[in-house]
Length: 122
Length: 108
Image 1 (cartoon, each protein chain N blue to C red):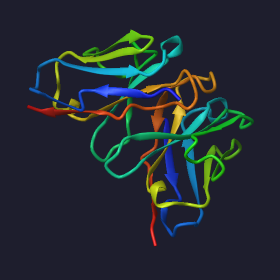
Image 2: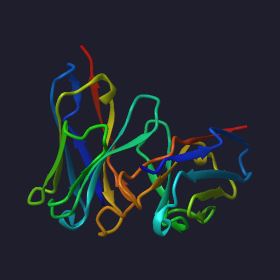
Image 3: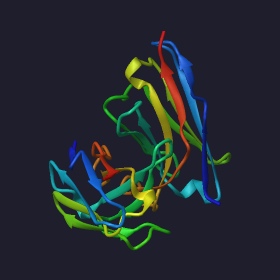
């Protein structure tokens, strides 16, 4: 069964840092681009960042550029999101999502994790 | 950045009836790279339609997508109980891969 499982969320103070992880199973992780999508409480979906299958190419939303780093360890089938200089408006559920196909950055998202909650508050 | 505007914000429909959702893009979406997702409360989104009109694996044929360039439509031919949810469109033809603000389909 194809599965994504996020972890690492929690409560952090403004200005703090957090590292999210997403462990994949059931598919050949290294050939697919992966993404992080977040959802503020009661709000819509916002794509945050994406990374190519090999990890050499990354992309970020303007709202997080310079504060967030996406990476992956293909030997461990794991995707990461390092969040720094966190602000209140970074609060939300963070989902990892798999590209449907292997054409980097031109794909919809066919598999989603259950999400991990990040709360930024003093 | 391509801005996607979904309408209506909320759609009230009776079970078994048809629902038509709209997604309008601020610029042309290249190669019809547009997807639709359904999100039930407390759950992750699920891919329904990709490339504007292709059904994702396991999606029943009551879901259909159409459109091109700046105007796209998701049609649900006969609403089932599990279809009362929020629907998002997404374009993935250019970065950033933006989402619409969502349409909530509620029971009339």
